[in-house]
Amino acid sequence: MGLLKLLRKLKSESNKELRILLLGLDNAGKTTILKKLASEDINHITPTQGFNIKSVQSQGFKLNVWDIGGQRRIRPYWRNYFENTDVLIYVVDSTDKKRLEETGVELEELVTDEKLSGVPLLVFANKQDLLQAAPASDIADGLSLHTLSGRTYQIQACSALKGEGIQDGLEWVMKTVSKKKK
Image 1: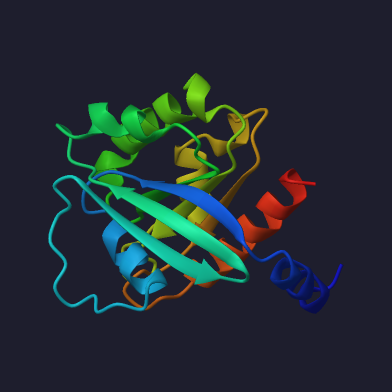
Image 2: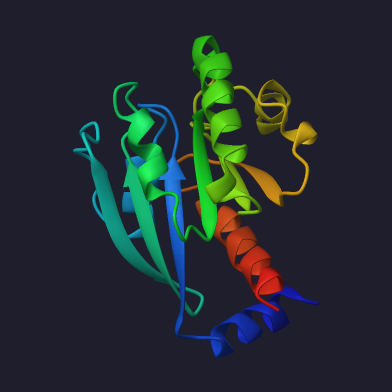
């Protein structure tokens, strides 16, 4: 199916709402991605101490995006937001090689949680605009995404700051959810 045909089909399926959970370690770029999605100013972003919720219209869908803080003391509360999640977006700082293992452990806990069973996963390999950023393929290997079974997933290189790759990730989300709901 061509992209134009897919977009027309998605447009005709308006009134669909998706609950998207946006998670990742602190400083990964979750809030920047959320603000880019909402076409808001990204010049003054502070660490999320709790959560941010934004509703964004995209391709005939109303996306209710829950951006939950990623500081270590907040992570145990992530599970309180798992109910009725349609898509999990996990954001990784591609320049933070020291915390790749830590982010992998957190992602593993998420994908093995029963409440998120079968929920499609989009991993944004963020900060690709920086020279020291690891390529998305290295991030995928570091997170052992190839070992995921029973789950649809995609890794998408992006730069939240420049807005690059975010729309590509969203298109994957729409396409995946449309297939799942058939």
